[in-house]
Structure formats: structure tokens, C-alpha cells
Image (cartoon, rainbow, N blue to C red; front, side, top):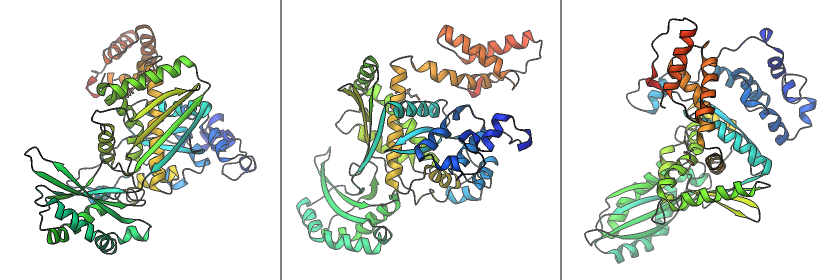
Length: 480
Ligand code: MEV
């Protein structure tokens, strides 16, 4: 971890960040005269200017000035987050320690007119850079708007070989209102107190390969600000016995569904003033991902590059969201893109629709200190807002990828940043790194490709030139 120098040793630019003058402030804390004159958007804009060029300490201070990080957060982050394994012991089994991912922030996001700092926990180089760069571009030429459609999650109760479907349907119809009340009183009272609860039931029938009929009861519930997995599973299991007694059928299993088409989150980007050719290329790239599942898979991976890191940072179940997103992408029988880009009246319009079921309470969202911190950085007060932010970042990430892929290609942006990893993987020391990186950048711009082998060769040449004794490089830790 980078060490934090004392105030006395700071250079002038560093000192200006610490004392707030980088944000136009004359002192160190918020609430100063100059700051008071700025609205939230202007303040965030100022804080994000040159953000990627700051060192770790300066980034902390910028976010502290912005009111996004508190003094105790800085202490916590500086000492590397959670250190005691006690917490891990409470979360999972057979604990050995933690697997730590880097936590960064994406900048320049303005969603539904509100500026955000987006915390992202992710190991892949260039995701945060691409998100921030594209968000800045969108801010300059357009807007991002979002909405959540529907409120209910789904629990499933399976009757593998239903004997009398009509009777089961009749029993459910007759008892639905009573069961919903009973479930809300006995199992989902916490949700009811927060304005949600079990809402309704729908029976589906499915033809089995052996010609028999399978019945599946969908139980719907509004989980409010929780993701709702535990409560909906409890609801379904509670219902098993009354269902069997009243219908004479056998329940095979009960579990939530991750294909939550009853609660979808949508984000939309509109941009004007772009080159026509660029917009058309993005539209063509979008059509590619709509028509071809091979391309759709990669396209959707790029979207999830934006979404998963927020889910991880906020302690949400990213496997559930991934499963739901991919299932939704295949809803019409072919796996397709979750996004659609089109050009209308010289405006580039992008839309993403997906079930992005998240929580800001429950699970580890309030138990994991890093998740709590990330939720505070985002400043979200509802699960829906978090879901809308995920949809917005996913769509921006997709736009960034399509813009790069249809113009300079993916290598330029990605590999420039990846050069750092290659240099490290080749075994360069801190002193050697800048020289190796510079040479690799030259090779990249000449050859348009770069590999770990290049990094090893450049390092060996450098060491030969400097007559240094080279320690054996260890290239195994980096993918090329
Ligand atoms: C790489 O992590 C993600 C991309 O492949 C996404 C895409 O192809 O759209 C660049």
C-alpha cells in the first residue's frame, strides 16, 4: 500500500489538494465560501478534473473534500480494509483469509441529473478508466436516464408430476387471498412493515418430455430495499404444506427464480452532436450483438464489466444478477444483447433492460464494512436507485467498448494500461518499470500488439545495457 506522506513533505500541487485549493477552496474542509457557490454538479465536475492523474493520497483527499469519504474511512482504507478474519468466519465456512480485489471509483457519472462517484471492485485493467472516460463523453454530449419497471421478485414451487391441474388451479384460486395474508403476517411481516410483502400467485403448467404435466406456482413479493432471496425462499417453503394438504398434490421443491421479469431496470442514453459515421458504426455493432449469440456473449460480458464491480463493492449477489441477466438475454429463444443502440434524427440512443435485483439491506450489504462504505460513497437510499445506477454504468461501459471497437480497436486503450501488468509480470523493479513501460508503448504503437514476451525481452535488454544482474523473471502471473 502506498504510504501517506506528512503534510510538511508535500509538493505544491499536493499541498493544494490537501488544503482544498484544487477545488477552488481556500481552506481544507467543506462549507467554504467558494464551495458554497457551486452546485453539486459543478462541485463533482471540479473534483473529477484530473482525478486519474492523482496519487492515492490525493484521491483520498479529493473524495474527502467532496464529502464522499470521512476521516475514519481514510484510516480504514489506508490500513487495507478488513484485517481480522472474525468477520469472514461469520460469512462462510472453512475460512483461510480474504481474497482482496482492488476497489476504485469511476468518475464523471451524471445519472438522472445527479452526479455520482461509483465504487467498483474489480481486477481487470481499464474497466474503470473506460467507464469514467465514456461517462465524461456522455455528460458532454447527452444524458443518462433510468427507471425501474415493476416491484416484485418471484419464488417458484414445483409440482413435478401434477395429477389434477384443474383442481390445483381451483385450490390456489380459492385460497390465494387467505394465504397471501397469512404469509404476510407469519413470514414476510418485516417486508410488510417496510411497505412490501407477498402480493399474488400465478400457476404455470409445463409439458414434460415424457408427456406428463409439471405445474409451477409463482409466488410474487415486493422485497423493498432487500434483494429478498431469503424471505421469498421462506415464503415458498411455508406454503408447501398448506398447498399439499388442500390440493392432494406433491410439492417437489421450492426456490426463488433469478429470471425476475416482473422487476426490470432500464437505462437510456441519448447523445447529439456526434459524427454520423461513428453513430452508424455503433448502431451496426449493436445489430451484430442482437443477431449473433457469439457476439452477444462478449457484448454482454462488457456490460457486466460495468455492473459486477458495483455489485461486488456493495456486497450484492453478483451471481444472481449475472444468471438473471443472461437468462433475460435469451428470453425470445436466442441469446441476444442486453442493450440496443440506434440512430434517430441525428441522435444516438442506447437502451439497456435487465432484471438487476439488488439490495441495500440484508445479506452482507450492511455487515461488510467495505460494502457499507461503497453504499455510502454512492449515496443511495434505496435498492431501486442502486439498480438504476448499475443499469446506467452497464450501458455506459457497453458504449465505451463499442466506441473503441468500431474506431481504434480494443488493443489501444486496453493494452496501454495492460502494459503496467506485463511490466510487473516480467519482473521489472520499481526503477526499471518506467523505462520498460515506455519502450513497450513504442512497440505497441509500431506493431499494434504487445505480449509478455516483449516485456521480458525489453527488460533483458535493459539489464544487459545497464550490466545489472537480472533476477529470473516470473511471467506466470500475467495473462497475455
Ligand atoms: C472486455 O473485457 C470487454 C469487451 O470485450 C466487451 C465487448 O466486446 O463489447 C471489450
